[in-house]
Each structure stands twice: as C-alpha cells, then as structure tokens.
Amino acid sequence: MDDPNDDSNRDAAVELFSTICSLTMEAVATTTDWGESGARPGQYLVDLDVDTICVEPLLGAGYSVLSEETGIQHPAGGPSPLGIVVVDPLDGSTNASRALPWCATSLCLVVGGVATAAMVANLATGDRYVARLGGGATLNGVKISVDSSVPLADAFVAVSGLADHHYGWRQFRAMGASALDICGVASGSFDAFVDMSTDAHGVWDYVGAMLVLGEAGGVMVDAPGRDLVVLDHAARRTPVAASGLALLDELLAQRVAR
Image (tube, rainbow, N blue to C red; front, side):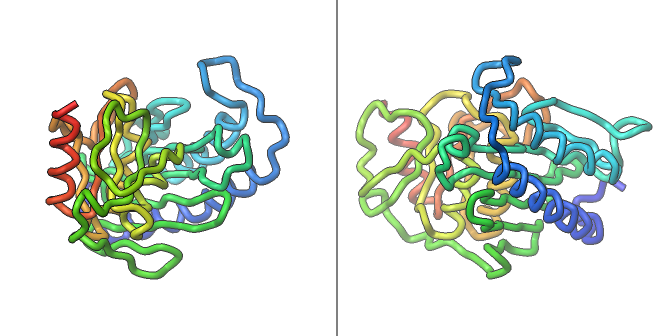
C-alpha cells in the first residue's frame, strides 16, 4: 500500500487509536504501583504496561510500531505496507504519578515518511486531539484552528527544559508533556512551544502533535532545521512550534541569541 493519501487506512488507524486510548486511560486511572522499572532512568513500571496495551493491538492489526519504550517492531512478515505507528504510551509519566492532569498517549501513523493520522489523548481529562492529513484537526470532535497573529511580546509559551534568558514572551509554562503542550498550541491554550534543551526529544514525543498542529494551521520545525519525521529510535530533535510563522521566527531568533 504505502500510500499516505489512503483515506481508508487513516480512518482505520484513528478508529484503532480511539480503542487503544480508552484502554490506556483506564490503565493509568487504576494504577497503584508507580515504582520505576529499573531498566532505564525515569521509566515507570506503568510505562511498560501501557506500552503493551498500545503495541499488541497495533501489531495485531498489521502495522509496524516505533515505541518509546520498546523500539521498532514489525508484524509477522516484516515491515508493514500499512505504515508504522509511532507511539508514546505515556507522555508525562511523572505528572501521572503525582496525579497532575497533564499526561497523554500519543499515536501517529506514518506512511512513506509522512505523518498521516494521529490521536493525542489526555489520559486524565479524556480530551482527544485527532488529525488526518489534509482533513483538519479536532478536539473532542470540534474543529480547531490557530490564531496566527500573536507576537512574541503577547505570547503564552509552553517550554520543555530551562531557558537561559528571557525570550520576551508575556508568560511561559513548563507543563511536562510535550505532546499535549504542542496540541495546546493547536487549540489555542498556548501560542507556542519551545524545547529549551538540545536534542532532547524522540519522534514519539512530538510527531502526533505535529500533525494536529499542522492541520490546525500552525507550524513546527526542528531548531537546527532537520527533518522531524525520523523513524530511528536513537534519533533526537529540538522541536519549536508556533501558531504562525512570524512568531516561530521570533522564537528561533531567541534560541540563536542565547
């Protein structure tokens, strides 16, 4: 197949994503053991539980999978012609462990190197962002679009990491779940998102939200200018997102100025 414009593949993926997100939401809500796995720093036992909930049905439906927790996996027969689903099972694990309502499951179907369908679900509130390539973006079924006219001086910006100088924004927040932060730009909760670190984000952290933002009319780039859709578990990027190009340019100029 390998066709990013296949509507039936995108629709089937979104339907499966919805089922998966209902299960991950239930799993996180009922988790009582927030101990770490011991496999790597910052990985909770529940991360692995939620990963299984995501990966098994995706492989069963014939998709390849790239997950933060378990890397690249293929169904029987090798790489899938349906595409590869990029999965962040539990974005904002520490938030979830502290009962902070800002954590998510992010799923994005990539076909031929193109993000084609995505769902980012807030596991605490039930809010769901959905996007299909060329089909717009929605929040809980309602179409969303950005206000692209906000200058940096008036902007409310989500950040990951610590800024080493004041960017000149109106206010900023460090929320701890990048997928939701970027989707917040798409829905107007934020005007922009900036990764203050260098190469701290894997593709699972942002690619689903990137499609939501793009379909809502926003923009996102890697600060050094590399391709953001990179299907390599070891690759890292530095995403910067904004409601419009002018604001994006202001933010990138501030990163250069540091």
